[in-house]
Image 1 (cartoon, rainbow, N blue to C red):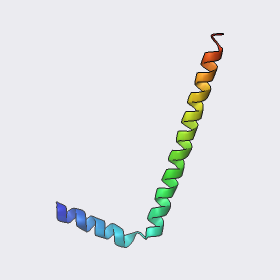
Image 2 (image 1 turned 180 degrees about the vertical axis):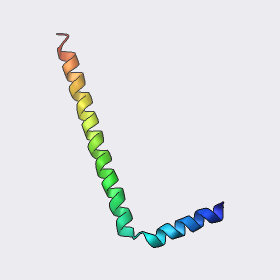
Image 3 (image 1 turned 60 degrees about the horizontal axis):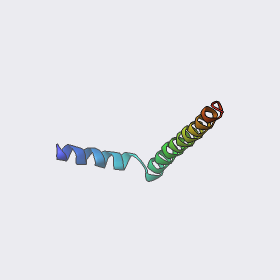
Length: 55
C-alpha cells in the first residue's frame, strides 16, 4: 500500500505544476477567509441586536 501512495504522489507531482497547486491553495484560502469574516461579523451583529432588545 505504501508503494501505491508513493506512485500516486509521483503521478500528481509530474502532472500538476507547482503554480497550479499554489493557485488552488490560495483560492481555497481566500474563500475560507471570506466565510470566516462573514461568520464573525454576523455573530457580532447578532449579539448587538439581541442585547439592544432587552433595554
